[in-house]
Image 1 (cartoon, one colour):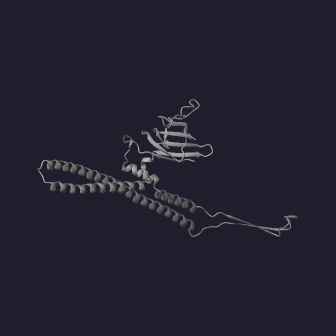
Image 2 (tube, rainbow, N blue to C red; image 1 turned 90 degrees about the horizontal axis):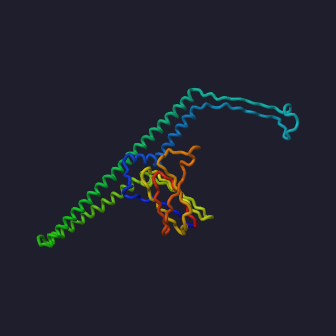
Image 3 (cartoon, rainbow, N blue to C red; image 1 turned 90 degrees about the vertical axis):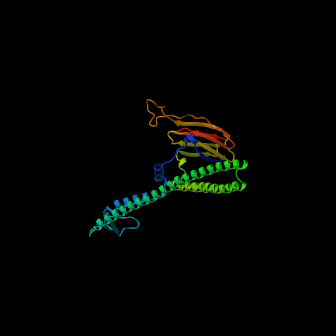
Length: 304
């Protein structure tokens, strides 16, 4: 039985979309689990406010005496019935105090959420600007390395002409190690900063435009892949890796897309929004690459 793994590939350079600080905050607010949990605390506090306003329900008690075990005879003469109705009245402003306590708890939950939001958002912005700073330092280190390499090249020409000694050239070559080390350290710092930012965002923001789901029918040997591209302007490549014995051929390939996102079917135009044939991907070496058009939903089915 083949195992299926689908991964959105890094878009081609023209299709890359840089993310701004506003984009990062928006992604963070949607995906951070700590904020999601804090929002549930607010909902819980709001529910407690509603519960606090409820008044105790009346209680009805019903009792029987001398009830025959065989349920024979007259039920109205041979036994006694008793009933009672009670209602709890809260005195001393107890209900008002309960409501005030629930309102205070709701305000505390709101304040705690705002505090968590402020702290986490500031931490996100700090990591975002750390990425920008480390990127600038990396570019500076690479530029210094390039400039010093040109200096060594020019010095080497002077050495060949006999204008400087070999010791001076050696000193420059040793000095070059310092620039190489600066570039290596800058690359490491930049990679760590990008990793920390992606972890804070809750995933790789580059893959947010693509959603992939799949089904595998072991009896029929049919593998179906469902791919959604939310990007309104750019196509994205998706690489499918079949682990083990992959399917032999593509049975069906359809795409649902269009320029009008508000289009809909009606009795007058029942086929205005309908799937169309999609170019079948070519599989090679257990892999298949699909180019998913912008604002589209693609379904591909393999057999074998």
